[in-house]
View 1 (cartoon, helix red, strand yellow):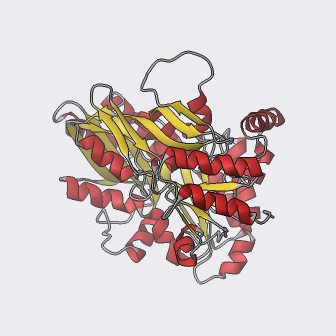
View 2 (cartoon, one colour; view 1 turned 30 degrees about the vertical axis):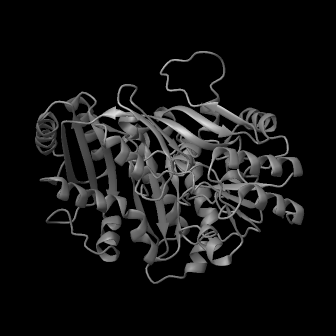
Length: 469
């Protein structure tokens, strides 16, 4: 349990932050203490709202000297509880909102930690560029959050995780010192890459205050289609065909089970069934090219080949941006559509793409042996092997009874993932939810190395103390 923060430390924090830079008002704190799925409800004696990197450094310096722990929060869109304080000082980056630079020659955008992903997209478009990180929470997710958690999203297949899209960082170290690593270089082979240590560290090695993000040219053609398929195995075969057909121009390749589509139809207003008849599984594919008309032509060839091979049962191609957004909305609303359905065991896992079908078959059998009438909604980024494997309580069943079986059910799912050479957290991180469980699957050598790195950076363990071992 976190010790109370001494009154003199709170007074010093108030003084360095100034008017508007802090709060202890319950109404101001409340939305920052609740995880959006209502699984974690936290508490904090003090909300720090720094406006500048220097403010962040002052707050962390005071806390480090006094041994007072902090939890750092961006847009509060995390799904593993790492952003919810349990008695620690809460440092929000919401006021670090400046976009410091956008340069089309360097293909870089420099944004502070509190800038939302949607704002990054808008600023990039203004100079004829794009930042190819796609998250359903782009209106709330912030630069500091998606960098610190090494976010994935829908376009990893072509562009990689967040760590592949960051050229440089500015961060405040656990002792309050500022590290300015905001380089915009593609090549810098001069020792340890500190930014890569920070990316995905979930705020344990330093607080990211700004990032230099890698931009790409706008695409001249884009095609989006949804296809009904018989099985995940058919989807994997289609993925291989898509790569071959486009020469690697596959922006996204998503998979959804029918029950997830049914949830969206029932619980998300305005959702329409994408095809005339229901199908066991759905693939959402997006191709993009710098050549006008190329993506559309590739999509036509891809679908024709899929029909001829018997892999596609039916398909629809978006005719314009409005239809493309409607198809994407079905995929992006898979998680929100589950919320009214009751208690759910959530899993964010990855396996090699070639083993996705085997994972789904084995996991289904394992969880149904525990809860025979459970409802399994599997969806995700099949193009990179990341499956969100969600197990909902039986229709009309008991939420408490289903929740009570979560640990056992997740153990079964994660054991299968591990046996298939996968990861128990593909893109959400470990946070508070999976930190203990990760010890079951990480090797002692790996855990010891991680602990040594953290000890070197933060010997007092004041930053996000409840996450990462």
